[in-house]
Length: 423
Ligand SMILES: Cc1cc2nc3c(=O)[nH]c(=O)nc-3n(C[C@H](O)[C@H](O)[C@H](O)COP(=O)(O)OP(=O)(O)OC[C@H]3O[C@@H](n4cnc5c(N)ncnc54)[C@H](O)[C@@H]3O)c2cc1C
Image (cartoon, rainbow, N blue to C red; front, side, top):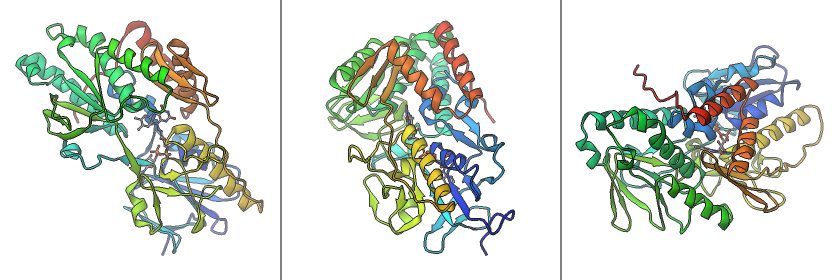
């Protein structure tokens, strides 16, 4: 027998799977609706993915990037939050199964389970690469880098073997932001932390398969980003791909072998693995195609939002990128649409408001490309990046924390998160 919220068994039940930008956005829009909402996430925190690289490089501490999900709903009476793993979704029976919870039936389902890393079958990647999509990923990378620097400090011969070298795969925002932040970590605070290890001995190599990094940006911004990386000591290799990885070596398709004990994977995403069991056709990257109201065409009571969805922009007729703003807006739209349906109103089509594409490269170096084609770079772009990302953070408290940490890092070059805590 499937569980339903006991409070108002007669009200429609909206089951939200995933507490990322999409799931939170949807659930919050149902606050005043006459429904019972159940939100389930495998973590008890909401992850702010855009700043994971700042946790990995010690710039931000965990609470700035992971926020308790329950905390976001203190003022919402019609929701119950659970931490559990979704294990199966039966679209025909309108029922979801979990690791521990009793199965939950629903009237409306919001699928917001996000994306996961895609290693594209590269040999050794699953075992040895460091992806950067979850909070545990960021902590694992930070701990590994700190451990390698400590090891090299104790045994300098490890430097020759590549203990301090890092290969970052992927010339998109994740790869570029991580490479830039690592370069600043090494040349800034590590120079003082490890007086006997020269940061110049640590190679940072960014590998991108396309002829240029930042293919989503205009050529002037691509060149600016490449120069900014090189200025910070990052070697940029384009037009080559990683073929295989071991714990100490990275082999490229061209035959180049890079001695590196760390490989950061920022090269690819695919829809959450659960989509493969739904029995519906998948779009590119294992994403679920949706109609103009963000519903599964074969099951209109199911709304699919964020990274797991292939949402076609009504204006450009292109599939929207996997971005926080797309997830947040599509989530909010799904919540509003369910509220409309429950109130007997007609749904309205989703219209994405593009706030521009942007990325950070390092202190004082960022790029922004607006919808109309206007571009910004440098400090101005950094300010725009900061404003947009602060707006995406879930609470004012998180915004204040991030501002204090960023200001501190800018003024003092400090990285207070650079400790390892063994449990
Ligand atoms: C490193 C990085 C940098 C980024 N930078 C930017 C940026 O600068 N700007 C920008 O706009 N976007 C950025 N993005 C993209 C943005 O973070 C995503 O588009 C956004 O998080 C997608 O939101 P979502 O709600 O669809 O999925 P997610 O935020 O991934 O949320 C999915 C939720 O589902 C939960 N979940 C997954 N599987 C299960 C399961 N089986 N059972 C229970 N729960 C489950 C997860 O725990 C998670 O909380 C970045 C992404 C990454 C990885």
